[in-house]
Image (cartoon, rainbow, N blue to C red; front, side, top):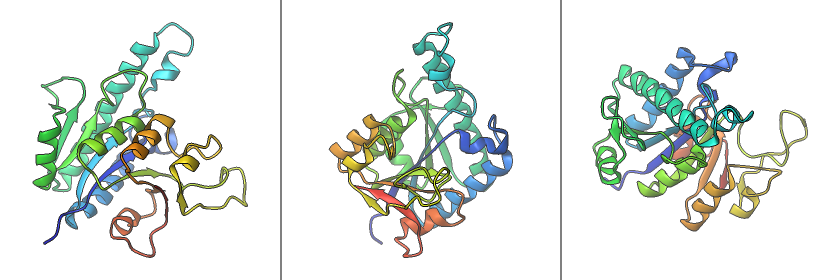
Length: 238
């Protein structure tokens, strides 16, 4: 048997909220856990990073000046821990072995991030959910996801969204928006396209880490992507 493909899946906290836009919708949690389980059952090694926007965003919390940006970002990091624990429970409910590793020490709740330990978990078939961002303010969970993907030596980072990939313009506003199957990192940095934040794309470029953008809510699409299925729908930045 050859080397397993190792992937890191990044999705937003808002994806967990469903139509309400806040909190966690258990039906969506169950659906995403099912999609991740399919990857594990097909012998892919999976890391996950989840945003925290369904609970709080640091930038928004600090908008009126009452809460400092650093404190706002710490609050945002803690919201990612909440989402990570919820995802762990959903995956374990489906029989998947999971570990949550946090960039901020909280031993009573989860492990502290240690790169070597994370890699061993992955090698043993466990899903590893990386919580609390990078542990530092002023960095997004996009950047945290790219950093963790590089650290665990992932083959690719998958940014799972609600759209099929990257378009030349906003598909929600323009009916003639065109899906771009392949982009360069330079194109990915274009503010008009905006794949991820600039820091995360630059980090991916420096480490030659491909970024795949896809629709997480198209059932089976994640598995098709990692299997290089010709029916898979996505954009790739490389």
